[in-house]
Image (cartoon, rainbow over all chains, first blue to last red; front, top):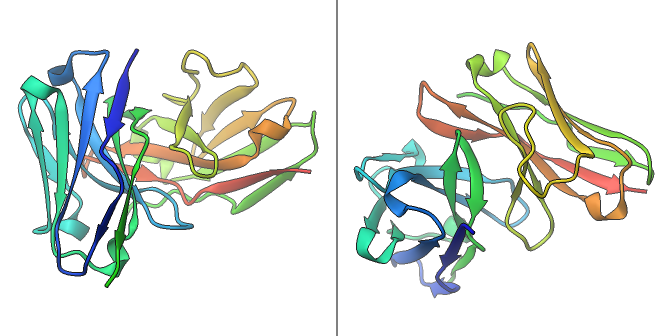
Length: 117
Length: 108
């Protein structure tokens, strides 16, 4: 069955960077796009962008332009999200999700990133 | 930017029917998907491509779309259906997911 397993919670200071990983299993990794979505406390989901795991094309929300990078390692079936210059407003649960027919059909368990001095 | 509008809350008695609406600009011809999210959990896809149900989702969950409104219907509501629900479309012009504002369903 399709599974996405994310890395553990992180606590970062303002100005730092964070990397969240998303290990996929149960399907052919390079055949699907991975989206990244975050959810601040008490808020709805916020789309951040996507990476095509096959051709490495990416798309980022303009909100994060210049601070956000998606990569992937096909040998490890793992996608990565790097977010730089963190502020307290980046405190959120970060999710990876596998696309299917333009929907987020499968989700990781989420990674809590806390930004605090 | 593209906005999907949902009612903030819906209350329903057990056994009754809950209807959650999602308003968009004719959805720009794109399909609508629905997610259920319980506290502390990742969202779960309950309806995709307007009306289809993923395997494992009860038949009590159904979707429809007409013009500028999509609707998620939960029949014979149970206490376990209490959750936040979000609609979502793929905006092909901007190549991004757009999520609705979310609806909190309370089972009385």
